[in-house]
Image (cartoon, rainbow, N blue to C red; front, top):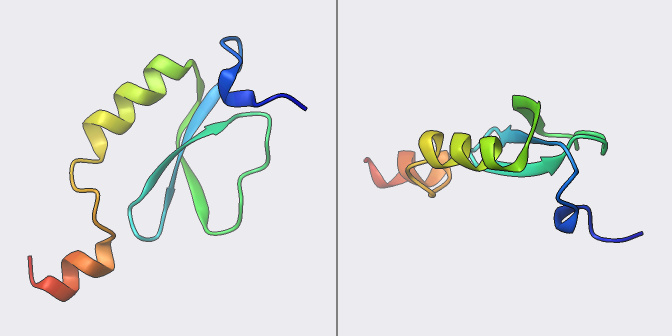
Length: 69
């Protein structure tokens, strides 16, 4: 199987885990345990824009909480 991230025709979705971390994910692959869909299937550019706008602090939520920020 070729890498689905290299296929320009693949639909993607954005996943988010309990730590607030985001992931670009091929829409045809099942969502892994611990992740939820934040943006349903669309093109890669829309997913990238969503991630860019939604995930400003790359630190996991638990680290932010522990640092008192």
